[in-house]
Image (cartoon, rainbow, N blue to C red):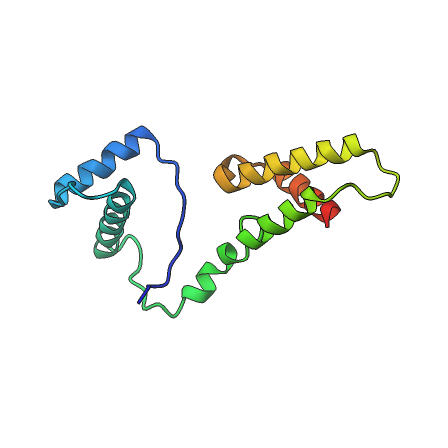
Length: 141
């Protein structure tokens, strides 16, 4: 039976990659037959348990989960459904509303660029880019 949680995609810098391997070595986990994703999960779980044991973060009973995850669960930009809707809208021919098709193509390309950045490098997006992405999403609906 699957456990609740999130599947995330991370870009990990080389120093952190080496630290993940160091954590595995320190706690005595053999690296053979492990994917790097599994190694990262084990290292993160180990470090978080150490933080709980040191009282750096509280040990929770799980009842707070729904409330704590709300800010992250509402993201529709990265959802598969939102991506499919956007792809469908971008694949339709331009409407006969008198707009310049070249402008529509530029907007579509910019929206695609912003969605890619949001999904793969969100920490480097500023508020202006998020606002622009929201505006472009509204215009394509």
